[in-house]
Image (tube, rainbow, N blue to C red; front, side):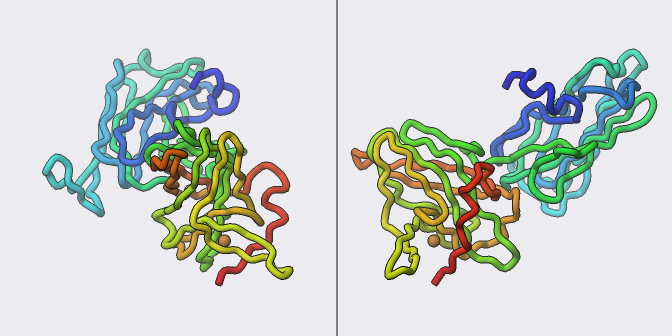
Length: 309
Ligand SMILES: [Cu+2]
């Protein structure tokens, strides 16, 4: 991504240069610091890592002293045959001299290497920026979702995605999936619907869907039967070549039942979709759906929550 693209919106905050990565992967991260503390030069950066980040290592910076703080793990893990009972929870860079400090008018990046948790979703890294005078404590986290709009000092966001996925749309050689979303649930709600647009290159079929969050996941259709809207699972969904098939409220949808946890607004739902192409070849697509109403108007409104069974 071009840095200038981010410039206007986020350069003022402490952000990760690469704010999304795959679950369980080795990740080279860097926190970008775009200014000092009300004009004062930056002399220290401390990054806190939540549980699940394994073997975090700092990248040294010339003129700066770097240290790592370890803590005992609530849940030890095995790495290269060794049981690890404590791990790095904080990295700190400190300018050795006044000359090494980062002037307010410049920016720099503080880099580290880590292995990411297997759990997908949003993770927030708290960044404490110390200056010759004053501090910026980048620690604010939204109550729901990942928007930091209006926040003065948001923590740095890292979106951990299912392997091979991307939020908004997914494309492979055979299908493109776009505009995906899943309806957020309230406490106690056990079922919800997921929606998207699927365009296949060749005549294909959607055979099945699954999600680790749902005990049962089915492709459903809705139709009128004696003035009553009914829905039922279908064995497969035809995807004609080049023609977008829309899964939307009141029409085809993916039904997720027996939910293992509530899907709060802003949560990410991992899903695996299995397809068959015109020649009978099978392929699958993994994606992450946002638990959020779509921003396009009209789509989510006219649909009453439907009852099941
Ligand atoms: Cu349904």
